[in-house]
Image 1 (cartoon, rainbow, N blue to C red):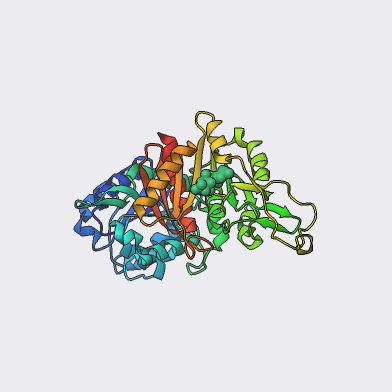
Image 2: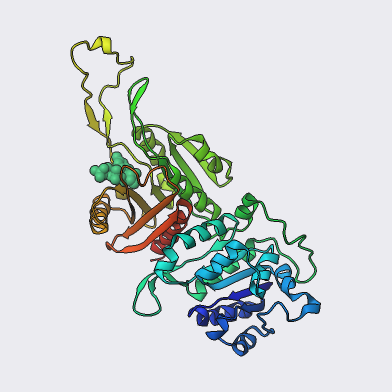
Amino acid sequence: MFIVLGVTGGIAAYKSVMLARAFVEAGHDVHVVPTEDALRFVGTPTWEAISRNPVTTSVHDDVPEVRHVALGQRADLVVVAPATANTLARMTAGLADDLLGTTLLATRAPVLVAPAMHTEMWEHPSTVHNIAVLRDRGVHVIGPESGRLTGTDSGPGRMTEPDGIAQAAFALLGDAPQHTAGTTDPGPATTPLPAADAGETRAILDLDGISMLVSAGGTREPIDPVRFIGNRSSGRQGVAIALAAADRGADVTLFAANIDESILAAADAHPGIVIVHVSSAADLEHEISVRADGADVIVMTAAVSDYRVDGTSDQKIRKEDHPDEAPTLHLVQNPDILKGLATDRWPGQTIIGFAAETAESTEELLERGRRKRARKGVDLLAVNEVGWSSGFEQEQNTLHLIDAHDDVLRTVTGTKRQAAEGLLDTILRVRAR
Ligand code: CTP
């Protein structure tokens, strides 16, 4: 296969030498396209020796061969590792003032990027936006991981190790429509792939063979035929997890508790997702418990009412029936579904809970999260902060992922899709232990 390896100007460029070697050793035809900046970190002779192909950065080399578009047209896969914040911004804008830029615009092959940068840059709204746009276009993003960064700081921003990037690349090659190098006319380079196609054909199938149950939305506890006790959960985060997992190859059952049809539409159309509609906590408990044994992973994002009304009225409660005083609702506690699933889980099954908490500080938020994780006995608890005007019905989210050792394995900030991808990466990490 014809692999283009774009290398951009970050210290992690040295690790991409190992990545190029892994591609060559697997028998692929590797063409390294460094940016000018990348050559400050690793020079042309190293790339040429490792890839066994000539290396240029300029669109003015090999003009008779139209190299500035030929590489992109011939590629079966383009990998950009490391991808700096600047490169992600340039990709988003479609800038093409060097060979990597033109190659990325001219290709219709799958594109995999491995971001590497300082945490502040990764979490900056510009980068968050750029990553979301690139993902929407079907670009695959691997990492970054949390860990030691250049200098003394640490946090999310470290490039995924070459081995992990190579595995993701091989998975894409197995899945992607394959061109024979140099013989296929990929059509006009400017024709964009439809977003749905890009999502379906370009996924890294690292959850292939995994059966996953995801609950989403908020339960409703009936008071009478026309009223209920509910909550503000829209279901967006759970639906994003179901979609991301199904795109990555999982068989997903989505338990949808009172989710708006417009939010559910994409999941409804996805061949990898079965939707089970539920309303109350009792419905959810029944539907999920009958399927729990067959699941490898259970993610409970649904906001479950802790209480239900004792003795629901079959008739509408009317004011004229209570002329003198307001009626009193007697509540009884619902079972804790998540705790029950965690208690009954089989070895190898991974149970993930969610907690939307109000807190005065991040420390308090994490402390509450740690206590709740222990109470529920789950493998991972995703904690997010909510308030009157934050956390609900929004496209952005921040999740702190707390594991069974009380460690915050990762904090993911971004769109709900980005948060979902980060959660799935972390679930794989927990399962690999
Ligand atoms: N959950 C559940 N069953 C319940 C309540 C909650 O399965 N009866 C699950 C939710 O789906 C979520 C996690 O437990 O994954 C945490 O929900 P939360 O409402 O924060 O937990 P509670 O135990 O109700 O704690 P709190 O008293 O803070 O509301």
